[in-house]
Length: 96
Image (cartoon, rainbow, N blue to C red; front, side, top):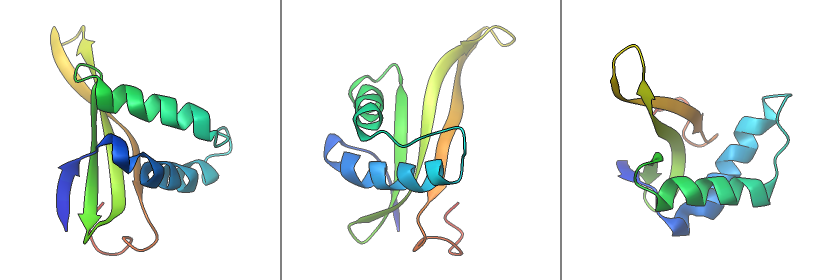
């Protein structure tokens, strides 16, 4: 397994993982167009954040978003973890 930063070509696989995540959260409805727009924004803009993925062979089995902001408590840039999800195939492997 390898940890890597997501690329635009990874968006379809990331959407599949987000579908899994949103199926567990009653307040969210999967919306592919909105998901694609959000994922592109993070991937294309270095100052917004990074999406880290775990690849097993060529398959993405997990992802987490690290979104950047400024902490007023610290007076510095910080990362906020969001959308952490592991595929069914990756569960139980310790990847999370």
